[in-house]
Amino acid sequence: MASMRDIKRRRQSIQSTQQIAKAMKLVATVKLQRARQRVERSQLYFQSLHATITSIFEKMEDIEHKYMSPREDGKKAVIVISSNRGLAGGYNSNVVRLITRGVMKKDSLDIYAVGKKGRDALKNLYNLKQDYSGCIEDPTYADAMCISKDVLDAYRDGEVSEIHIAYTAFINTIVHEPMTVKLLPFDSEEHRERMELSKRRRKEADTKEEVIPEEFDCPSMNFEPEAQQALDILIPNYITCLIYSGMLEAVASENGARMTAMDSAANNAEDMIEDLSLLYNRARQASITQELTEIIGGANAIS
Amino acid sequence: MAEKPFKVKIVSPERLFFQGDAEKVEFNTTEGEIGIYARHIPMTVLIAPGLLTLYTEEGEKKAALHSGFAEILPSTVTVLAEVVEWADEIDADRAQAAVERARERIRKAAEETDLDRAEIALHRALARLKTIKK
Image (cartoon, chains in turn blue, yellow):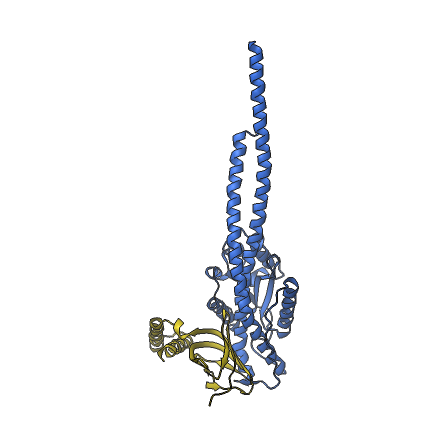
């Protein structure tokens, strides 16, 4: 049996780990709330933008646009959003697994990494094109613009034929879902379906009332300049917005994942402390009993 | 004569920038400057960097509007702005420095200089300056 001192030392070390876990959980909770607010604030913009794009597509009969026509065999660009810090349960490895288990071929991928953990996991396997890890701590719209400019340049130059984004969608505090979304070539049907799906899912998961965008549909909407030209600007705009909201959701998911992970870590530590306390007390009693027996034995021997 | 007010909403990805009534809104589009009163025909326009002026009951409000687009309906105007800032949020010295930097870049345009970008930067900085001047 381990000595009393060993058990005590072990228990103390677990106790301090538990304290760290508790503190990290609190920090993650606060950060999660902030990240959620930012996600909610960006929703309005995102939904309005989506509504506008949809209404343009409805108006135009046959659309031919450089961002929409699919191109055959070329490289694919993937924006991988992970976190800079670990201790968030399976958060980072789930995103990485999306890429490594995906059907995409190894040598045909260009990785645009956002987040150190994802970057480090993928940089030996794939071609790491760009690294924006600095901006995941506090993603701003300007960061998203910078990323979308880089990927769109690569797309226009014919370097890549598709652009995807891999991130963790934030559904609610406990449920996060790693997913990949195709950004380009643009497919309005696909996007509409996804939009509706995410809306529905959020409604199911969240009883809270959500922001409902005003009705934009207007039969005689005019475009100035022409819709075709408007798309030149709107699609990149929409993509930037998708990247931005992807980053915001990823940050919220990261903190949610960390919160859950740290919560269970703190609980596990509690269990271990309980077990060790029991062991310690047992050892203490055993040693007292042993001492008593020795004293009594010694006294008997003298008399 | 006081014009009939209509609803204006300015949304940026980071916040709800402005929401309220205005009698008239002026801003820059890719096709030129426009001013909007109530009962405008429905229209979607793309925004060019410039000054945004809101004429409300409390007076004029000025902001620098850099990119995005606006959706105009008879009773509401929704501006989806990628970048927008109020006059008092702008740092005059920085904007001035940016103007000079962009001008310098355009003047000394070398082969590798991205002229479009420099020009956009110049327009943005000028829009900021214009916003705070008045």
